[in-house]
Image 1 (cartoon, rainbow, N blue to C red):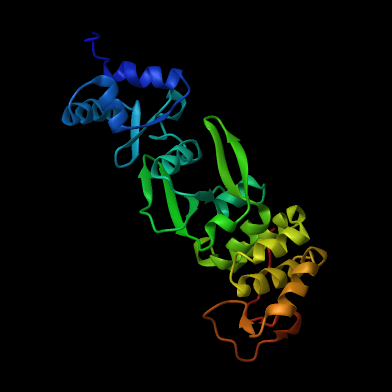
Image 2: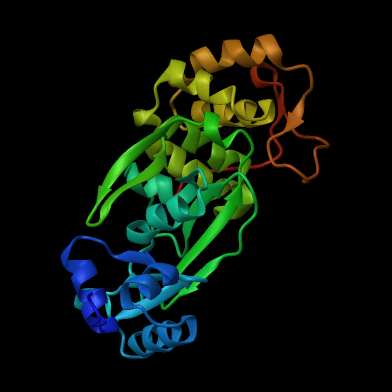
Length: 265
C-alpha cells in the first residue's frame, strides 16, 4: 500500500508540469491524503510564497514566475477552468471581447465576463474580474480564442456590438461605445448582426444601427434596419435616462438623438 504523501509544493509543481494550472482544494486534499485544515494550511503557505493564488473560494491557480509580480494568473488563463468547475455557461464580453477583436484603444481595467446569474467580482493580486448578467446568454454566438493555458470563449463581434450598447454604463458610456464601434464595424457581418439582435432587447438594435451609420458603416446596418422597421413600435432615446426634448429624431431607427457623440481619434 502506498503510504507516502505528496508534499503540497511537489503536487502543485507536478500539476503545472502536466499543463494544469487550476485546481480545487478538494483535489489537493485527495492527492495529499491529509485533512481539510492541513491542506488549507499548506496551500495558503504557498500563496504567501507567491506560488499560488486563490481567485475564488476553494479554487487555486498556479502562478508561474513570469506572473509573480501580477500576484495571480491572468484572468483569461483561469476563468475557463473556474467556470467549468462551477458548471456555469459564460463568455468574455464587452470591453474584454472588443479587445480580442482588436477594437479596444485601452486595456480594460477589469476582465469582463457575462453570466446568466449574478456572481461576486474577483480580486486576485492585480487581476480584476467583473461579472455581468446577460439574459439569453446561451443564444449569443461565441468564438474561441487561444490562451497560453487553453482556450477562452468570447462573444462574436456582432453580439459584442449589441452588448456594448446595452451595457454602455459598464464600458465608459456611449462616447466610448462609438469609438469601439468605429473599429469593430469592419468585422461585423450584416446578417449575423440581425441574428444577434434576436438575442437582445430591440432598443439595443435601434441604438446599434444608428451608431453604425454615425461611424460610416451604413451598409453593415442595412439588414438590421429592415429588422428594426419590421419590429420596432416605440421611439426610444439614444441615451437612456437623458432629456429628450428639442432633440432631432432618426425616423429610420425610431430614435431620439439626445446625445452628441464623436469617436475618439
